[in-house]
Structures are given as C-alpha cells and as structure tokens.
Image (cartoon, rainbow, N blue to C red; front, top):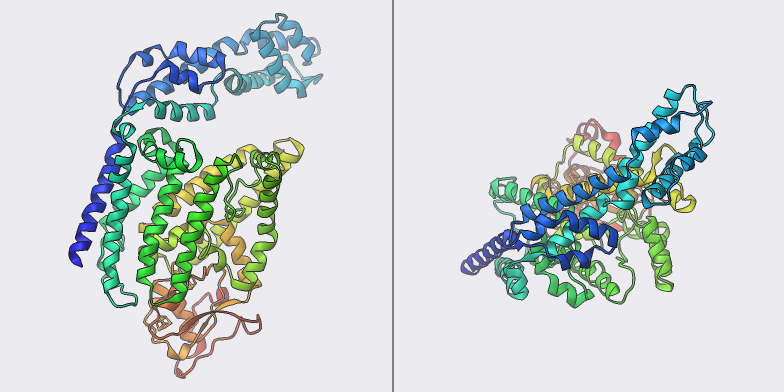
Length: 603
Ligand code: SF4
Ligand code: SF4
C-alpha cells in the first residue's frame, strides 16, 4: 500500500514538473500571414505591419521578448495615430476665439473644411464629445479654452485609440492570439504525448496516491493533520498557495505567457467544441479534473456516510455535465455558451448587454436560457432554499462549492472560528451583494436607455471594477489561491453574493436546521474544527441549541466527524426552528455562563 502511494506521489510530482517545465518550452517568430489572419481591419493591419518590421525579422525569441516586442508595436501605432489625428493647441485656440465666448459646432465645421479622413474624424469627435456644449456661453475665452482643452484630452486619449488605433481590449486580445499562433516548441509537435506526460501523469499519480486508502477501514481519519506541512499552513501549503495564486494571476491578467499550457489542451477543445482552446477552456478542463480526482478522494474518505457520498457524486456530476460538457457542446452547435446552473449574482455578467443581446438573437433556445436564468433567481433559489436550505446549491450543485468540497477538503480545518472573523464575514459578504445589485441595476439601466451614467457612476466603469476586484481578484485569486492559507471556503464565506442571497433566505424562511443532542456532546470540538464556514458548532452542541446560521452550507461534515452522533441535518416544519438551548444532564452549567458576549448574533 505504501509502495503504491509512493509511486503515485512520484508520478504526480513528475507530471507537475513537466507541466511547469513546458511553460517556457517554446520560441516565438512573428509571420506576416499570422498578422493577416488575425487583424481583420485592413488599415490597422497595415499600420501594425509597418511598425512590426523589426519583430518580423527576429526569429525564435523568448516569450518575454516577443510579448515586449508586440507591446512596443501597439504603443508605436497608437502614438503615431495620436500624432496624426490629435487635436492641436492651435485648433483649441481657434475654437475658443469666438465673440461671446460661446461654443458652436458650426465653428468646428468651418475649421475642418477638408473631406479627408483626419478632418472627418476630428469633426465627428467634436460632435461626439462636445455637442452638449453647443451654444453655451462662458465668462471668458480662457474658461471656454480650458473646457475645450479637457475635451481634447479625452478625444486624444480615448477616441483616437478606440477608432483608429488599438484599444486596450484589442491589445490584450491580439497580444494573446498572436503569441499563441507564433509559438513553436515540443508541445506544438506532439500535443497528445505532452498532455499525457503532464496532466495525464498528474491525474494517474493522484489516483494512485488516493486509492490505497480503500484498504483502511471506513471512517474519517485525520490523524496528524496539524503536523502536516501541507494541511497546517506549513511550507508545503505556502508553496501550493503561492503556485495557485500565480496561476490565477497569469490566467486572468497575462494569458499570453501561458500559451503553451493552453496549446496542450487544443485536441480536447477541438474534439468538444471544434475550436482551438482558449485560456478558459484550459481552466475549465483542469477545474473539472480536480473535482473528479479529489472527488474520488472524498468518496473514499467519507465512504461511511451516505450523505457525503451522494453529495460528492452530485458536485462531480454538475461540474462535469453542466459546467464543462454542455456549454462546450452548445458552442459546437453554434448556440450561446451557457451554464444552466450558474445563477446571478454569482454569474455577475448575466445581465450584461452583450450577453442579453446574444441570448435574444439566438432565438428560442436563447430566450429559454434567459427565462431559465431569471426563473432561477426569482423562484428557484427561494423555493429550494425554503425546502432544503442553501445546501442544495452551495454543497450539491455549485462549481465553486464543488471545488471547495473536493480539492479544498484537506484545508477545511484552517477556517477562522473567531467572533471577529464572523463579524468581518457578515460585513463583507453583504457588501459584495449590495455592490452586485447596484452594478447590475446600472447595467440594466444602460441596456434599456443606452445611457451609461446611472445615479452617480458610469455603469461601464462599475462593471469593470466589479469584474476585476470581485469576479477575478476575490472569486479566483483569493477564492482558490488561499485554500492552503485560510481554508477552502474563503470566497463562499466572505465574498460570494449568491451565498449571501441564499443565506438571507435560509436564516429567515427555511425548513433547514441542524439539531443538536446536547446531552451526548463530549465537547471534543471535532465539529467546530472541521466546519469550513468557521461556525463554532460545538458551542451550539454543548447548549443543545439548533444551528440556524445563514452561512451554513449544509456540507454535513460536522455531523460526519462527530463521534457521538450529536448533530443532525434536518428539514422539518418551521415551528421550533429557533428553539431555546436545552441542556440535558449538565445541571451545573448555567446557560448564561455558557453564552459568549455577543450572544445576540445567534438569535
Ligand atoms: S455547520 Fe456543519 S453543515 Fe454547516 S457548514 Fe459547518 S460543517 Fe458544514
Ligand atoms: S463533534 Fe460531536 S461530541 Fe464533539 S463537540 Fe461536536 S457535537 Fe460535541
């Protein structure tokens, strides 16, 4: 048994080393045909190729030199366009020298009389950015000039780059696609071999490491967990956390550097959706494999508990079918990418104009998807939480919860159980919910009216801030990268707006509760230790009080690890749900003495 585990560990380490090794395995050469195939706009392509002459001559350079070269080209093109199309000081002076210090678009037309591309661009730009100034009088020509100066800066900074240069989204997208298409290395020459040598070896090694646990008798064994460098924020945990954080940072912000990893899964992507893999295909593929492999570990680890076995099978199924396979097959059928179990506000882009337009234009199936998503928010969530508690989603269906319950299970004991953490948790998660609601209201307002200014913010900027800080930073980088540092439910506990919404319903209108048989409790503390949501379960158990907490995801591990069968996850009539503490056989402990200072939090 030990030998099989050792072989598994060696295979896993080898696969992981290969995986990291191929990161820098390619060299890069830019070809004119590659540019032609990827920059559709002829004028921009011409400009790019003019600026790219030195990079076109360089062959087999490193990814860092290549990406730096591309960025220089985009900067050069944009700067040349600003020089050519930019509003000059003379033009501003000319427009501000008007009797009555009044701005007029007629003056703009008389300034740019030519019909060439530059004059037409400038006329249109002034109309777009300054029509609101039409006829407005200023106290002095200086005041008018200052106002025009501000508008000219916007035109020079945004309008030129967006219309005749490369905006930041195009720069990001083209940097990635050109880098991926210009790579040459061992992975490109044999995808399957390297897929087997990297991800294949990791999966095989992990399974060989896990399967021998079947020889042990059923029942949870967490012996020595606090002496394990991986599971108690030791050096191995720190290293793992750092790797995960770096992975997420590169995935979200610098995908052009991980093109070799993405190329690795091209064959899988082509087989499923007919296209080359993108970064999120790679992410979805690895994510699903992690849930499946670590799901096997969960099935063995908790095989004495039917609840845990069913729950684990459920998250494995929903991730594989609903989050991974069905959306990819939809793409193959030319239908919109859609995860039927991802619910707003966790799916924060659900109401974005681009997505609503895509669904509406997809016909009946698109309208069904739109209706399905809205029905889940309005009816599915409240009804199911009422009958089953938030666990139906957080511990049985959700992809984030699925990863937390499988890959994150070895770290559940690291969740902070202090009252301070509980206080921070409530402030943070409900603030994110409010943020998501306000951001979405702005998005919907912009969709209906076409105006981006909503109340006192720009809806486009707000959705971007939300996306970067919550969608990427919190849910991705912190949410998973911090597993080995702060436990497996950092995102679910402190940041997920859907968990907050589910939790509010669970707290006030649900049949779900955990009942406690206080007289049986021996205060061992296992339940509190392994509660991933940081709930001090023992405190309730000692008092014989029902646990009715908004944050409880109903994972049931507190009940599974209890040696005395004290805890029971139940759905019953609401009556008596908020029962008072009942101390059985513990007459010498007064209720008041057992209450913590902030007892009102449990009410
Ligand atoms: S209280 Fe129990 S069921 Fe609820 S989250 Fe904690 S361990 Fe899971
Ligand atoms: S695990 Fe069971 S016996 Fe131990 S403290 Fe919790 S409820 Fe009590």
